[in-house]
Length: 142
Image (cartoon, rainbow, N blue to C red; front, side, top):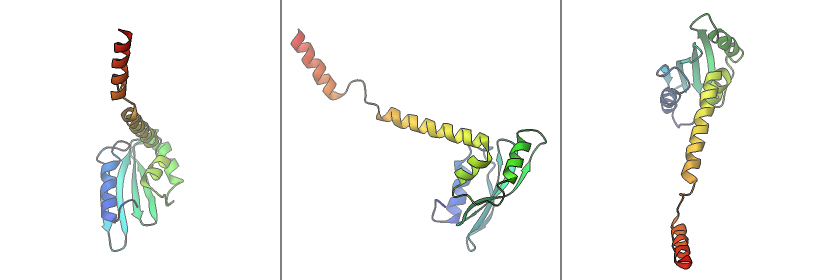
């Protein structure tokens, strides 16, 4: 878990992944601090509802239900069946493994963040030393 308490981790999950799941669909229904177990359900953009168990051992999908009888819901649910009860180290890893749409959106969000950092690191067209050099060049050439 990323946070020191189970409650903080569950709260973060309900807020941080709306870009790659049905927004507002993550709902905590078990918050057992004494036993260190939390459970929540959420709906993937492929149209599959999953139940995720969160413990200090990791994140596991305990069940899934397609919300309709067409693809991509059926193929995603079939893929999730292969990963039921398998522990994942992070919620991101779990979602990227079971949801192609989440994986695509996660990669796009990461790319966008990297681009914004790169934009922030690019020097301005005219740095202070450029102004001095430019002024000196004007003076010497006139």
